[in-house]
Image 1 (cartoon, rainbow, N blue to C red):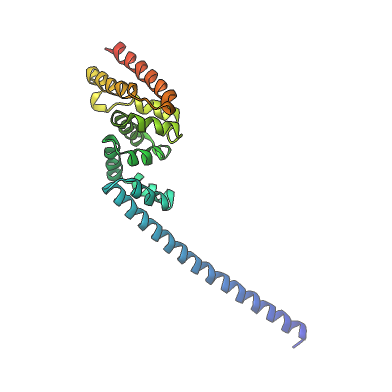
Image 2: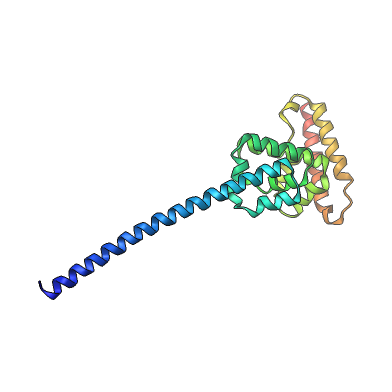
Length: 203
């Protein structure tokens, strides 16, 4: 057997060995990634459950410390959890409002409408907190406007109830005294007054 043939066979054997090792390494890496993803998902599920059970600055940090996309998916893909989040927001919980507002762009259709309605109701409970979300660019000006003028579907054929809700928001905005929110207060009052005019015209 010639020396050239021996060298060729050895090179072929080395190439086969390298390919086999690459395949094995790929499989091992894939298992590690799957395990890591599963662990992250479980951590997010736990963080989301705890936040919805006891929403606070602390549980919000735990939710944000996880993988942002995975943790939002734990809530955003569950109608039950989204409804729970909206309820917390509409009842005036600032941590829940901040988290929901920061993920509005991940919602669409009816889920987005429900979230905006909840944020509008949050403004009645905590107008300063609501305007701060706009000042801090957590809410865009468009999202802020939509939330302020978005009312529950149950009020659709009840203009008096609509006007009462908008009056509550107007009063809440009027009471804002922080200088840092003055500009946003003015815009909010303008949006509210314009919507009130539209409601009265439709009567």
